[in-house]
Length: 218
Image 1: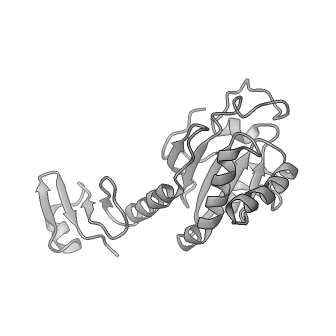
Image 2: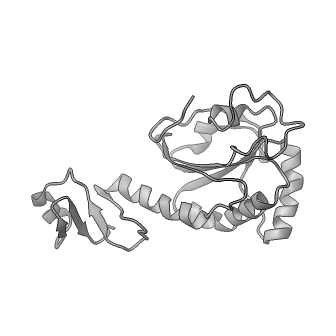
């Protein structure tokens, strides 16, 4: 199954470091970040999980829960969490899925169906594709996917920035230009007439007939 933006994120039940969860139920009425890792005790992932732990308050401000996944058992995750805190100074407070049977990794199209049914004996290289970040909305649809190679640490400030854009554009009839950050001008949706734009975005600018900019709505 190939997953695309606006597809419903596959639902599942799984064991985590904070007990069993039913994914859609766990998301509730808010937003969620699901980010995956090819194996426990890998160097780049250790820094990533700690960085995400440090940013958790920022995600909470945005009504967004964090959920990690690694294709190793929960017991291994609990041991790894000590290393993550030692290395990064941040204690992991969000749940981490144990996926030793590779069920979630396959469900989210990060591993092929014929990858087997156990994480035992698999190396990080075998699981290299399990390096995806998903942003999932309250409607349980996938809003963003980012896939990274094992050698490149993820930029979670970018994921936070993208989340800000996605939440803003879900609320208002706008989009955001390249390198946009909170407080920058936005682009008015093409579905909004000039007459309505004048009411919704007083003083908007017409850069080109198809590009109209305005201050970010509150």
